[in-house]
Image (cartoon, rainbow, N blue to C red; front, top):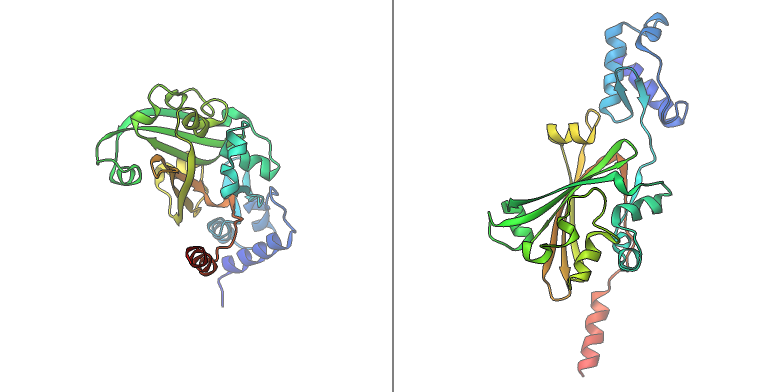
Length: 268
């Protein structure tokens, strides 16, 4: 037989999933449930902590226990890097996500710091430089309104970006079209990229920086960006609050068997 706090938590969880409590709604205060005979203060507190651990609610002093929003930002896949967005327009990647999600944005919702740092093993491997060599790190914190959504730190070889807007620490994207437009203007047109994503438990610093609720995982992104000749012009590491994004990819399904057959016909 389940303990009373578990029964109470399960009942609220079902009501949340059924829409009886909508995103942003506040659950009854602990005192109110105690007075209604739902259990002791410790029982109700344990139920609410379980709901928070399951990602259904957030609890904070002054706001009580509130049902978490369920409308994550749409994080586009390859479409967010469409050259028409940044080369011909001014839609950098985080803005492309907001536009696709039908959400408002301000350019200054992306802050940044720029510094020269020694390449760690991860960064060195991504950029193809020796460990401890100096690289530029352009670190951004992106918010939606007052809520942080993710961090993104891009690393560059100094010879690719020295003297460009990429190393200008002013808040917001690096001018019209952002960093990819800067690279394009410098003669480094991006051609293809590789992304790796995985979920993990956040560090204490990430919990604080991203304002994560209890038990919220993060999704870590590694992005390597190449020119057509295979030169790496950016290696980036992003840390995303898992519940604040829905990752969307649309692509042509490959058929390597047909491609090989076509190649053989062409060589015949």
